[in-house]
Amino acid sequence: MDSQVIERVKELEQRSLLTSTEQSLAAVKGEEIERLALLDTLTELYNSRTFYKEIKDELKRAKRYKRPVALCMVAIDGFKDVVRQYGSLTSDAVLKVMGNVLRGAVRDVDIPARYSAEEFAIIFPETNASGASIVAERIRQRIGNQSITHNWHNLRVTASVGLAAFPAHAREHDELIEKSVRALELAMQRGGDKVCTV
Image (cartoon, rainbow, N blue to C red; front, side, top):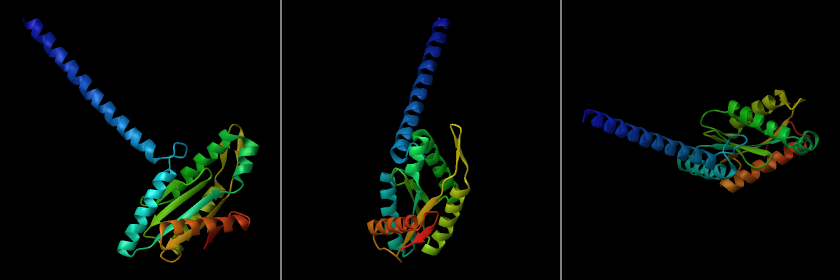
């Protein structure tokens, strides 16, 4: 009789352990799914869908509290040449390094994202154009100073940065994006490795 009770208790403990393990795994899977939905898997920055949601939210907040918000667009100069010369694996390594540089150059409240295949965006809440230009210059310098080694290739890249701010340059999120992209294009037209404001 005692051995049956002991066996039953062991069985219940085992079931309890399995149930709690399954619940933990389900929670991890849920967190992982959420993380995958928000982030770009290569750079581990926010993806473009999350970026659009965040820029809309930040602009609403900025309008409500009459606070500035700035947006920087960053592109690797000559990225297509990097892809052609070194291949897709090395160009992916360059993008990963870019993600790390951006994360390390901004505050916790700033929102770096991968905007497109070779462009990045950073939302700077509570920041005007002059404040964002200081950070943009720091980012440009860090990227230029970063040595990238992958598959026996050592390379350096430079970046062009364009920025615009609310309310100085734009009143709506799509206008803010358009102005910062235009500033980015201007920086690239001027030879790259520059920060330009609209």
